[in-house]
Image (cartoon, rainbow, N blue to C red; front, side, top):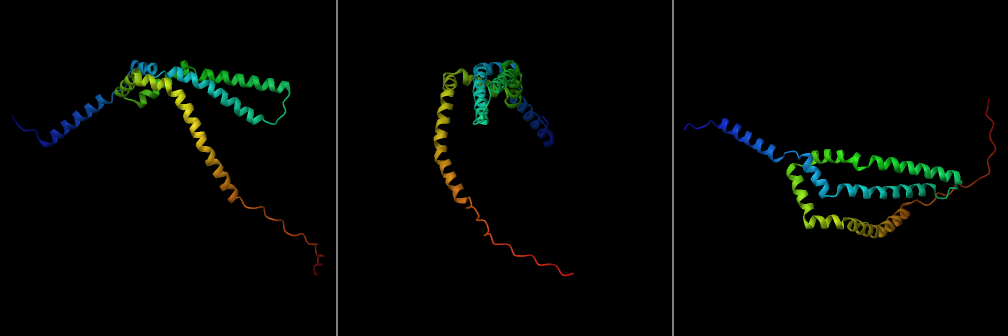
Length: 184
């Protein structure tokens, strides 16, 4: 058997490597992604976020309006606007609207192998436990972060007070001197 030239062997090895890489990084199918979305409870997670967003929006509005007097009509109009805003947000973030976005982003981000492995994890007892405990985990993390932030904020406020310059005293007031007349 005749030996292949070095260049031909390199080309063949590169072709095999590229082919293997392409097979390894195959794009997930819609069915693969749908199975992952179901296993990860993506729809229910999205639905749980919406009321939180509405609450945050209401709190921001209340902070903005704090200390401002509003008539009953103004309050009713503000409530109507908030309700309309919530309706628009709920429609924009509905699973019907968001599902295609999830599928597209997952396809761009993960390989078929990734999607299948992640799905397998979420279908496992450990994966289901993670999903079940994530809300409590997030709540506990937020509480711990807030506790950690309190001393830091106090330290920051003290630092700002040390840096803030004292008010500059106004120059002393002296009686004005009579103006000299200009020579012509």
